[in-house]
Amino acid sequence: MSTFFKTAETFIPGEMTLPQKYYTSPEVFAREKERIFDRYWFCVGHHSRIANPGEYFLQDILGENLIILRDRQGEIRAFFNVCRHRGTRVCEQPEGRFKNSIQCDYHAWTYALDGKLIGAPFMKDVPGFRFEDFPLRAAHVRLWAGFIFVNTNLQSEPLPFDELFAPLQGKLDRWNAPTLKVMHRERYELASNWKYIFQNFNECYHCPTIHPMLNQFTDYTSGANDLIEGPFLGGYLELTQQSMTVTGRICALPLGDLTGGDDKRAYYYSLLPNLLLNIHPDYIMYHLIFPHDPGHSTIISEWMFHPEAASRPGFNPQDAIDFWHQTNLQDWHVCELSQRGVESSAYTPGWYTPRETLLAAFDRDYLKTMGG
Ligand code: FES
Ligand SMILES: [Fe+2]
Image 1 (spheres, rainbow, N blue to C red):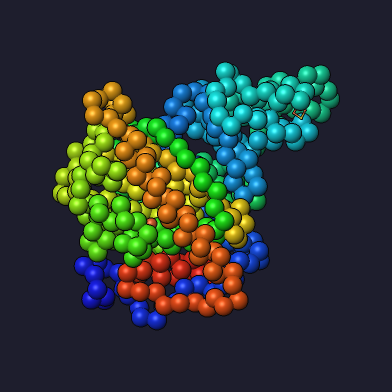
Image 2: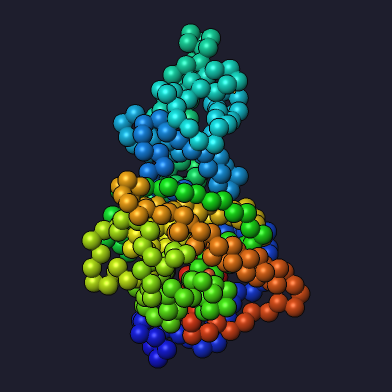
């Protein structure tokens, strides 16, 4: 057991950062696709983004483009944006609301919101053609705490969702996560491997140097981790102000009846392969990471508030947005510097410190999943 922490994780002196190839090699990236991206579940956002039937948004995931929508029955679905006629992208607008159907503009083949082909000019009486054989192809979809997770693998089954997410059951109940509302989104393009974003997220060793503002609002040596091994990692830090905002003050209605100290804590959880959660008493901000190749990733960051926050006096979301936007830019910059360093012939793995036990845990789980 570590003597450095009040927490349960083990610090093993001499554990090293990953070798260069894990950040630079196209072969490693191809193996990550096979072993991680095709088996785990990508978060594409929170269901409040598509609150009403017909609402949708498009999401790129590793070369695929998905239509994420809410159907007429209120179910969330994810379809490949590929027409079953000649394969054309069916939908171009990045977000919006379908009335009752989805129509491909090329030759007007038309699909219901549950994906069924319901119109194909001149095909009704063609011998051998059966409408039921050509629905939009669906990706797997599951929900956890109001977040939408998809898997785009058409060849084999993803990891069983309920089993995988068992350690997270009830984790966000205190903040009423399914009822919250996304109110702001930022998109960032990074010249960085996706794992640097995870690793940077999982330590606050860098907080005093990289984040002078954030460092005033939490004690980076405080707190404890409750998820310390496996694909999901994290814990909390004690807040030294009311919230993580530019002013340090609460900027919206509390997300729940937070007791047991949760009104004075910021929780951080990372979920393989792409969700990073920042939980505060008055808002949740999360990052969705979409890797493109070993050296490039897109991050979408979203800010969620209490559904009634906007109608209450004192609502000041910009206080939270500005805080994390500035902090994010500081983080993304060091992720890009890490990428530039690891691409050098001078890079060799370095020692993890006692404040980076979650990174060592991330690497152990990653290497196990990659098969060594
Ligand atoms: S390609 Fe979509 S209708 Fe022809
Ligand atoms: Fe940071």
